[in-house]
Every structure is written in C-alpha cells, then in structure tokens.
Image (cartoon, rainbow, N blue to C red; front, side, top):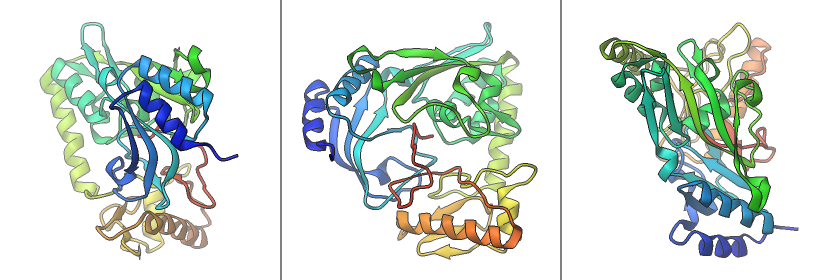
Length: 320
C-alpha cells in the first residue's frame, strides 16, 4: 500500500505551521545541485518539532531522508516520494569550552564552522573538520574524516532521536562504541536523527590552531576541485586510494552527459550546469566497472544514492 503523502503533509503542516513545504527541489538541498523534488520538506527547529514528526510518522508512515548540508547525497531525477527533514534552530547551537576541552554542537552546525570557532577559542584537535563540507549530524552518521583523523577519534557522545518511537520518541546518548563507528559507517538507522554531539579537544594557543586550520584549507584548495560535487565518491579500499585507482585506470576527465571525473582529484565527480542526477549515477557505475576491469578492485560508494534502480545505498540515513 502506497503511503498517503498528501494526507501526511497536511497533518504535519497543522502541527508545524509555516515549516512544511511541498515538492521542493533536492537541488536546493544538496551540493551536487541536481535531482528531482522531495514530496514533503519539514524545517524542524527543536526536539518538540521532531516529536511532532515522529507522531505523524506513526500515524502515516512515509520514507524519510534527513538533510544536513547535502554534501554526500545524490537523489534521483524522479525525486523522493517522502519526507525530507531539514534541521535548524536549536540544532544550530554551538558551545566551545576550551578550559573543559570540549565542544558541544547541534547536528546542523557546519563542520568548517565548528573547526574555525574551536580554533579561535583555543580548542585544538578539531581542525581537520574544516576540510569536510558536511554537518555535525552527517559527520556522526558517516564517521566523516580527513587528514588522518576521523569523527570517532574526537567524539565523546552523540544524541540520537528515534523517529520510530511515535509520541514517546526521545533522544538518547550514544558513545562511539554504541554508534558502531567504523570507516565511513555508523549504526544510525534511516529512522533515527542525530540531534547533536560532544567532541573532545585540547587547550592550545588560538594562533597555533588557526595556523593548522589554514594549512588544511590551503591543501584542499590545491588538491581538490570546487564546483558542484559531493567530495569523495568511493571509499578507499584497504591499503590503497580510490582516487589513485581511478587515475591509474585512465579515467580522469571521463564524462557521462554533464557529469565528469575531476582532472584535479579522480575521486571527485563534478556536475556541470546541464548535468542530471542520472548522469552522475551512471558515471559512478561506469567508473566502478572500468576500475574493476582494469585493476580487479570493485570500489564501494561513499556517496549516498537514493531513488535509483537498483539502489546500491538503500538506507539513506542522515546526509552529510
């Protein structure tokens, strides 16, 4: 039985007046800037809003995607026939406590903001987040990392709200072990929402922290492309680099429609102005097959791809 999305949208709109939109372009919510429309998008600003969402999902279940900054997500051109949750309000709160060696951040806080604010306050150890264009919630969901560090290296605990709990839903705390964090993976389900996290750092001179931030920013500018992309497309296989394998297979500059493998970094795929989500998806599949044929290594996508048939990532979870 197909979910009654119209009825769900009406009911949720009554619970969250002015915060529910219909048929919003996913291109406005993701860094690839392609894809179809989301049937219902709710802007949720606090736990009470999430409780209303959970209660309505209990009454009329529909598929759910949680959007962070959309920096690791590709949604098909046919769109998503369900609910997209965008977190704002209290989920954008950020508290830096350099004396205590911790930062407490809502899930909607952009990672570069967390890194820069922590550095300015003299809290070191979080600088690597400046090079990751996602949100705190996405970092927890995907155990995001870069420059030799991962989220689990600095995470104390995260709050996770279980949407399946209906009117009794609430956020519970999980530490890295409870989240099952591994390389670009957690056990956070698609019907759970990361609402915030606490990170451990160390007291340091603000100037030293800022210098490390700028060093990472400069490295990214020199080695990674800008434009419409979602960062790394594939996970690195054990002991190797996905970018190296793609480059060694002669695929830099390889294109499908308006989507192209970056000449600057082969694990970044860029979407041009005329690209479709289908172009990006087909490029991912074609590169995967060609690398396997050339090297014997079958790369696994890091990019979350939703609504494609077959869908290699059936559990969207919260996006980066």
